[in-house]
Amino acid sequence: MEAIKEKRETVTRQKDAKWWQTAVVYQIYPRSFQDSDGDGIGDLRGIINRIDYLKLLGITAIWLSPVYKSPNDDNGYDISDYQDIMDEFGTMDDMDELIAKANEAGIKIIMDLVVNHTSDEHKWFIEAKKGRDNEYRDYYIWRDPVNGDVPNDLGSTFSGSAWEFDEASGQYFLHLFSKRQPDLNWENEKVRQEIYDMMNYWLDKGIGGFRMDVIDLIGKIPDEKITGNGPKLHEYLQEMNRKTFGSHDVLTVGETWGATPEIAKLYSDPKRNELSMVFQFEHVGLDQQEGKDKWDLKPMEVMELKKVMAKWQTSLGDEGWNSLFWNNHDLPRIVSRWGNDKEYHEQSAKMFAILLHMMKGTPYIYQGEEIGMTNYPVSSIDEVEDIESVNMYHDRLEKGYAVQDIMKSINAKGRDNARTPMQWDERENAGFTTGTPWLHVNPNYTTINVKQNIDNPDSIFYTYQRLIQLRKDNPIVVWGEFELIENTPDDVFAYYRLYEGEKWLVAANISEQKHDFSVDEEVSEILMSNYNRTEIDVRQMTLKPYEAITVKV
Ligand code: TEU
Image (tube, rainbow, N blue to C red; front, side, top):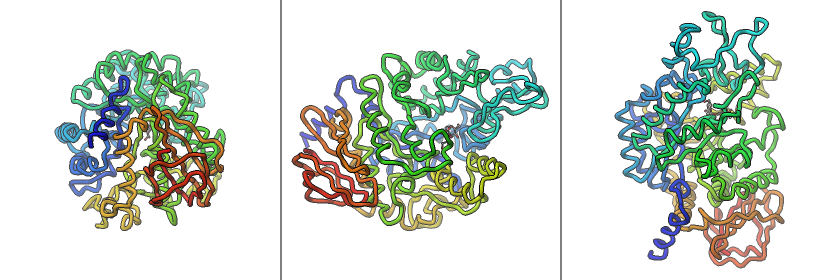
């Protein structure tokens, strides 16, 4: 025990270690996590009731998707009051209790900061719409028609134009997402100060930081059709750091869809006093056709995945910090997307866990990933809830796409896949609610649920629990150098981690085929094996379908 205790201390004692460099973050989509009052919608009390479960898993921070007042046009990513709690989720007292109880359990609460836009029911927008002279008009982005039409051809992520006409004033306002999510005008310093005041309100509550929704868009120049990475973006982030979280020891992670390693360094180089890290999405785009939308599918090539992830593991150096994820509330479930959620369900879910959690960076686990929850394919658009999928359906139908092709895209990439209720046990509605769930429960909850995972020592849950413990006990996982092993079969992703003379080898077979694998190394200890091997000789072995190992060499 002394040796492990000593090692644990070295994990956090390293250089000027930040707590978020040794953290493991669990993302909760509150609407689908746990309902406590039978209205069919998850709530804060439900999360409080599950803190012991999260402590058992071993995570040390929760990223909470938005819980603020919202009309739920985009399920909480359309905020009408940043300093009040959505009615369905509970009260501010519940929120204060969640922060306190999580902190007592050694778990920090990371709030979701959605400040590229508000809801159209926010008081600022209600005022702004009253007229061109209203003091809040310039909190948003208004433009006159051009030749009686939209100011330019900027498009919304949720299909159609990014410009909505306001009859009363005869102007258009900008919305890069739904028509009910008007973009804020960050060039207006009053807007920036209002946001900073709100952030300090939450920091004063003792939260552990912020996940920053589409933060790469706040520097937009709509007249030049610049949306991401605008010229003032980093000026705003450095001002935000100075005026809010810079004086707190918190985690800040930016959602930056277009980031490259060079761009990521601009956000997360400690010398720049901006953010802790970013979510980069280069690996997420590997199964969409070049230059097209996420709906235009193509198979993911493992060779591409290896190249992209190795590049990110080795490019930031000490000028940034990686976030590590496969899933979130916008993405299809990894075991269905790139694994095999039928014959090799457990093996492929465990393989992706081992492959990712042995890398360098802060891992993020999305609710249900730790028990291998899967996509839930539907047959009709009537079963689809998500605004992004519904808007795309109508847009592509109008453009002549075949319904079955549209539904194939939605089943592959639609966001509802990630938002089906958390599967707790075999009771009706998977123990998520005693009422009627707001979104269908995946019928496979009878065999894929928390209770069945907890009762099975060889479950996916315990694979995640052990990976989290390995990170806590071994500095090599947090601080070790990453080195890709090149000469492997295309579908085998293998790498080393090296730290102060210690060397770990990770190998994952991302396919249904067996693959020979050999490196000239002597195994001294087996740390992870999703096939529970008791002997491993990496000088000559055959990896089974979706097999993953971590060994000390
Ligand atoms: O997502 C940003 C975003 O662009 C995603 O919606 C993405 O386009 C798509 O969903 C990829 O599958 C953030 C939030 O994560 C998302 O839930 C919100 O809908 C969006 O911003 C607007 O706030």
